[in-house]
Length: 389
Figure 1: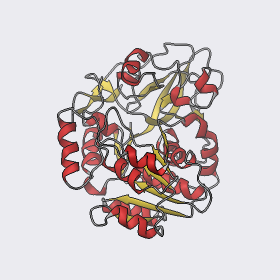
Figure 2: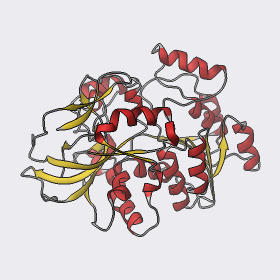
Figure 3: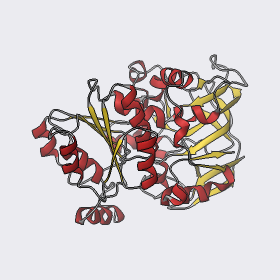
């Protein structure tokens, strides 16, 4: 089969690789009908996530048709059309029983590796380094899905692939960011980053009762989507002094919730931004937390900071004193996608939301290397890329 494979920093290649096979009786083989490039895939593309190996198959946002199942998979049949969550979960450990699927105890075969970095191992993830299990990803013609009796959700034929694809990651991720904040109706939510997760967090915040959403970015096409599709008020951080602007817009109180949907490669202004870039370049710091610092400083007293943006290791100069003095609450982590699949599918079916509004570019899988370059460098107003094998 053909697949997009990682060969190093800024080096993605379309390769012929062996077809996946059933290894475990709870496996399924999916023929991929649509896949996507995620913002967190760019952390791999830029070489910031360790333990990648040459030839690793990328991709954790995908869906398709079941073509083979293991003997213990009773919830799926050959021919079913399914969306697959990006975290892999066993369904039977303590964390899965607690609906904390991204913390599964049993799905990362390289748990020892993650324990050295994080203290404990999170769940395995498709196509996201050997630190997270070394699983082949879904930017391919076929993919093996472990624990297929837990993860994939069947989708109705009345909905297109593009309408449901983002149940695999970015829609639940944006929704969880708003959900875990547990804000009261009428609250003000500020969101850093108007990429796919940020855009869907805007829509989700309104669905959950926010009165105002203020979106912060510097890319014109993303700000336009946030305003016209998301209904948010927008700030361009290159033009507006963000902390002063947010204070003024909230009557001096600051936002009730600040969502950092950027992660480890945030852009900023001034000397601190240059400091972060230099330290990241020389691997003295694994992330550039400019947006996180700003969210902490901007958040109102007693507020909540939520971090769906991916961080891979150590970051510097976090204003913990500000967080302590203001009594902030922090929520963060990978998304428990399986928890949200059924209710969010109902939201799509009812017409409450069509997540496909974030798609700006469509390519064949063969064009994947060019698509990565376009997405990274935001060429041709690119916000979200989907690929058809």
